[in-house]
Structures are given as structure tokens and as C-alpha cells.
Length: 456
Image (cartoon, rainbow, N blue to C red; front, side):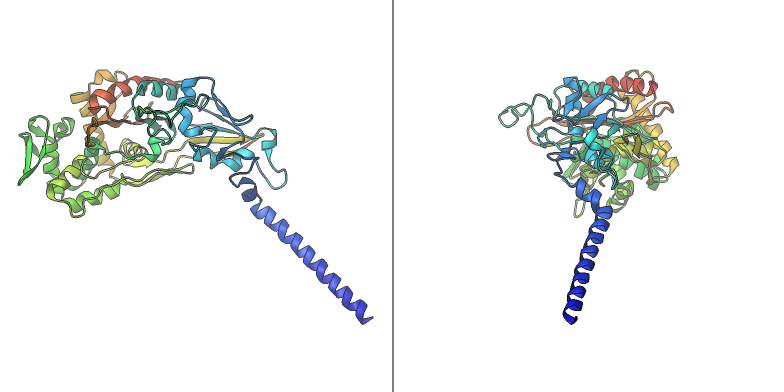
């Protein structure tokens, strides 16, 4: 009897262990099942490193990508090229982290029904416009760089093109190409690159001066072409003569801004660069952008001046500077950008984006004054006739990069019209002057962007 009792106890212990194991597994399944299924490399969810379930459309419903049957891209070459850095390619050389972020929502997974992906997966609708993306790619031509626009009221990215690019349905011989055509093609310049900003950084210095210097509006500056620091100097290409604050910004006078930087001082300038967050990364939809740089530790007076002008060691990321423009346009508070508008799986909406407004970075009065000055730039320098239907506020930049290359051309700003809340950023590498190169690109794209918004 003792032997039978002992065996019974052993059996019950084994049964208890078995039931405990089953209970543990079931508990883990309900708690962690989605993580197991969504692990990168899962053949049900991924094609290599990129999302392999569902359909992706633009903001109007135009098909951009169907992941079934080895990824079917848009019907036109130009649209495929313009979207490459957001959708990725078939081989995983270019990743699409924003789409991967919504893998669970796209697959429609839940612990009871499993994966909707067996019947094709869900649909992700992007904020980008196919029409605007194609127009932006055309406007960039053979240039390398990036052009982007976003709705500074809602946060929707309307356009973000990075060049060079290629057609994922006709991949070129990138490694064998010797003329540099595809140099940097695997980089999304909008999110991953940093640029010397040149004179667009004067907007940061202008805002700091408006906040810090009580008499800045009444000051005048005399430009002789040189602002000396002993044996060193800040120089202008032109002799601007006497300027008020508005004209100093419109004419982009280095000498005037060297004087302003001197009045602010290095520590104060650093304080406002940090306050405006212009060198901080931006995170949205699983994407974290590159961070910028503003380093004037142990810098000489002339180096600090050049930093306030947008040279020296300054670096900015296009997406971050775009959101800075959005903050100025929005009265001092930026709405964070986003790319994925909504996701549906089956008959259910599994995700919908919401506008997220960041903290205030500058007083509203300062933002309004900077808006006025940036519109004055267009009146005095860039020509309102280039933007006949809207009120554009902008600033160009020409960033010296050293070596034998030409300067990088920059243009940043926004439209100050209620019907068209568009902030923009244009960077064109090795091209020359910001005004000459970027203004024609922007004047070509703004009407297209307005048409997209009018159609909604």
C-alpha cells in the first residue's frame, strides 16, 4: 500500500507539473504571443528586414506597395523612386522602419484569431501625397539632397524625397557605378543626414536676439564687408552699408550677425540653441532622426560669430529644422511630424494617428515677429512673384563645405496662410547659392501642394 501511495503521489506531482507547465505556456502565449509572432524574420510578417504583409497607400488611396507576391510597387517609375526611402527595397538594403513599427497592426494579430495576414494583411495609409512626391523628385532633377513639406497644424508629412534614389523594380549597378551618381543612395537624407546649415541658422540667432536684446529692433549695423577680430575676421561677399535689423536678415549680412552674436555672447547663444532644440533628434513612427551639432566650447570669438551665422561646426538635420519652422509658423509650438495616418486590418481600424503638440520653445510674440521678418525676406530678396498665391516666409542659406565642391544650397520656411499650413525645407548638395537653386524648386512645388490640400 505504501508503494502504491508513493506512486500515486509521484503521478499527482507529475500531473501538477504538467498542468503548471501548460498554464505557464498559455499565460506566456497571451502575454507574449504578439512578440513571438512579430519577431523580425518571421516569414509570415517580414520579407527579409522589411514588412511583408499588407498594402501601403498614399494619403489619397493610391497604391504604393503590395507586399504579397514578393512586393509589388507603384505602377510608375517616378513614384517608385520617390517612395524608395520610405517603403524600402526587396533586398533590405534600404529599410522601412516606419512601416515595421506597425507590423502588429498591419498583420491584425490577436491571441484568438491569429493573423489576418493569411488573407493578405492590413492597409497602411501614409500622409505622403503620391502627386507631390513625384513632383518633388522631378523638381530635384539630378541634384542630391532632400525636399520636404509638412502640415504644421496637423503634423502630417506631405512630401519627403531623398535623392539620389533608384527604381526598386530596376535596381542599377550601384557598386559598379564610378561617377558617383548613386553615392549615398542608401541614406534617407531627410531623416539620417546632417548638413552645415549656412545662413538659415541666422533664424535661430534672430529669434535669440528678439528674446534677449531689448533694443535689437532699434539697432542699425554698418557693413564694410569685414567684421574684424584682431587678425581674423567675419566677411561678407558684398558691402551692405547701413542696415536695420530687418534688412540685416533679408540681406543675410554676416557682419551684422557677427555684431549680434557678440552682443548675445557664447553662453546665451548656446542656451537658445538648446531651448529651440534645433540640434536634437526627432522621433516619429519608429524613426529617430540624426542629431545635429552646435559646439563652441573653447571656440574663439570669431568662431563663435561664425557659429551664429551657421558655419564653424554647426550641423542640422532636415527633419528637425522643418519642425523648427513649424514651431515658428505655429506661434512658438511645433506639432510633431508623422508618416502613418492610419492602419486597417480586416474590418477594424487598428491604428489612427493623432496630432501631438510639443512644448513651447519661444514666446508667441517672438514667433510672430520672426514670421514678419521672414516674409520681409521674400519681399526684399526672393520675390513675391515666385509665390503669387500665398504668403511665404523664408530664409535661404549657402553653406560652405570646404574642398573642391560647391556650396550646399538651403531654403527653409513656411506658408503663413490659414488654408495652406505648409512648412518646408530644401537642401541641395554641391549646387551653389540657396536663393538661385532652391527658390525655383519651391516655387514649382508649392502650387502642387496647394492642389493636394484643396482636393481634400
